[in-house]
Image (cartoon, rainbow, N blue to C red; front, side, top):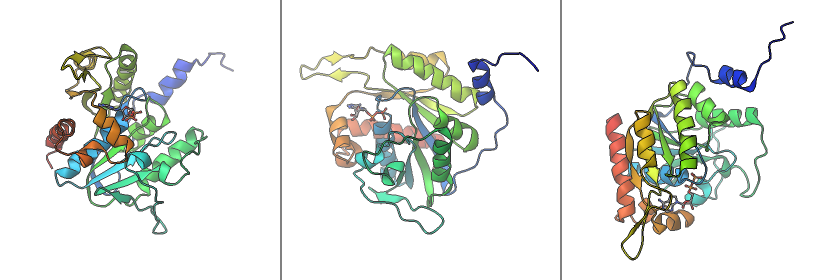
Amino acid sequence: MSNKKVGLSDTMKAKTEPKTFRRNPIIGTKFTIAISSAKGGVGKSTFASNLALALKKMDLNIGLLDADIYGPSLPKLFSINEKPESDGQKLKPILKYGIQCMSIGFLTEEQTPMIWRGPMVISAIKTFTQKVLWENLDFLIVDMPPGTGDTQLTFAQEINVDGVIIISTPQEIALQDVKRGIKMFDKLKVKIIGLVDNMCHFIGDDGKKYSIFGEGGVKKAAEEFNKEFLGEIPIYPNIGKYGDLGKPIVQSLPEDKASKIFINLAKKINEKYKI
Ligand code: ADP
């Protein structure tokens, strides 16, 4: 019997070693874009929902999949209380603000904790990507959970993802995790479209700029890893307010300067895929 010790790093290596993955396409969409962040609370879901709405405003067909099994936010962000119907084989997404939406939160009670182990999460992700009746989408936007866990690995290895956008705040602690995230997607050969600096600064009533979480860190991380820096989104209280009201700012106040930032980012992303 071999007495070679298998350390955690070996296990991790085996899990993430690049090989040729057989990635299944998601039926019903032209492109799938994952919105990822290394840490929670950096504004990933806010970005995903406003980006989806901004793309919709460009007359594209958009789906929004909330893949955060442990902390779904789409029911609250889009104020959805219905349960999806099934045609006997597939779940029908819920149409809200013109967007086809799916979330584990539509199937559970609001405060039910998801005490699931990895294999159940993986199976839920497969259901959401293979057993949902996405119809004629140009883009499916996937709001990933934070970090580099089972969901990310399942998407990176088993599902055809056309690109990932990484959201971060500029704090050092968030950036460290961002670098881990970049390395994971690079290693698994999933294209990183670029990085977005969210909550980069706040402009006070005095007109002064306050860089609450530091400055320039996300751009620097992008440069370090030779990735595109897609842009920055300041802290606007209205972004938080309208997210909490269940009608994100791009839907509530499309002419607001904050909405225009999301709309410009959406244009930039759409240009890359030329729809
Ligand atoms: P994550 O999905 O990364 O956990 P959320 O999208 O839930 O983060 O955002 C965390 C909190 O920060 C929410 O209350 C959200 O409304 C708020 N928020 C996110 N981005 C901004 C922003 N640019 N300006 C103001 N508030 C924001």
